[in-house]
Image (cartoon, rainbow, N blue to C red; front, side):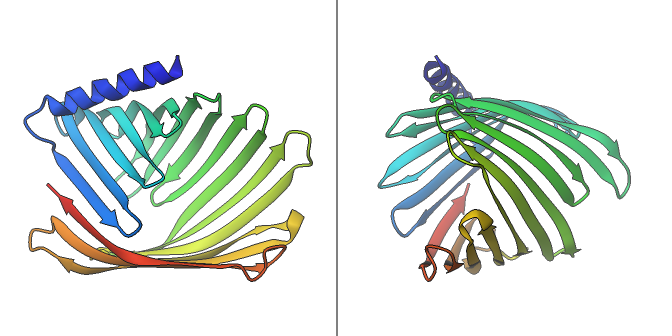
Length: 265
């Protein structure tokens, strides 16, 4: 039932996009390893204050592809919508709903509350809520998977520095996993994330699982190498590295690097 419903809604949103003269925004990228991303967003009806928007995305590599769709109603700073995804091979389908309610807006301050819920074809259920104040946020998410277990996760983000061209954010999380028939265990971590308006960015952080005494460190970065004058086409370089510094996998190191070409119509 969920698979058929998700496929029908995916087709419906696609037809909405295809029925317009053109996509309001279309973007894509191709990176080493045959990884690709395509996406588009179209306003179906309304104006800047109140509207209905639909979007589609497609991504994947040689191991499989995943399509996702979104249909959102926006009024001022409030919104409500439905979303879903379809993966191949599998298939693995997910459908869900979400909403955002603006509780306060001033010249400098804004306070919002959000919530979502979703269910997949293998009966994995996920739901959560979040609070957003200016550039800071806090969220709680619960995932239940029959026969496997459940997980509760808390995430927080705080903006430490912001200018028209640069911003620095602190992110942290704490989770508790309860496998079926096994003791529960927790994980936590934190990191810094820097972004530049010219397309550069970097992040670094750690995560730790005390039950197995494992700690992982990571660092990621991207740099914009070239941009067309209209900023529609860009060439970027990216890289990442991670290392396990304690625990059963101590010394395990992974590196990744490459280039990405993206174009926005």
